[in-house]
Length: 263
Ligand SMILES: [Zn+2]
Figure (tube, rainbow, N blue to C red):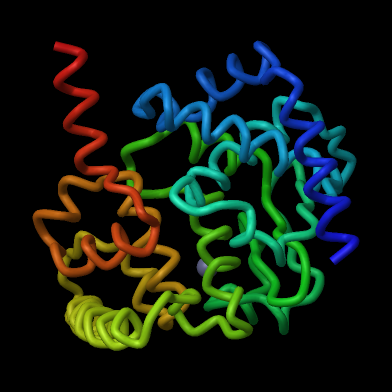
């Protein structure tokens, strides 16, 4: 309780400071989805980023000198996922390790997915009781390309959301039994369909890596949800609705609104 109170007091003080103009520049330059946010969403994201940058333990690895630009670019993308929630969803994220480029896993048994046992270098990892590990070049590339369906930071932080309830099973912590029931039903159907399509060598909208296991399915679906929301809503409506309800955001509508205001 005391810790809770201290933390909240620290956060209040932190948020009394204005969001640095330079940080806005970093988000504008490096995070494609930042432009799609309205004023209210930007203000909320700024607060999340301020707390995220200050409270997490950041470490540059492999000779990387971490800069504010790197921290803010990663934090902005990570916090977009929790824009409809709050910091609580990242309470288990303590440490973020950033390598300059592709990472060779050091504790492979704890990693998720096919890259688990692979000796190949990977771009990122999320550990159940440990750090999120990212390659800076890949994190930046994902931020700069907001529509290609791939985003390393969304992917790894989706894993952390999935792990919040203690297991990486492709289902994050949900609010009700009804939500769990719907989640299991929709995801099982979509995951099976993806596995079958991939096994037959068919082209799929969802990246085939999502057929690896349920946890990767959720992480990959999250990437498409934020990067190609209108196509996903068209092709995988039930899955889109499920993620919209979980993330409490509607990127397809946001996308349309942005296009309308640009005309
Ligand atoms: Zn993964």
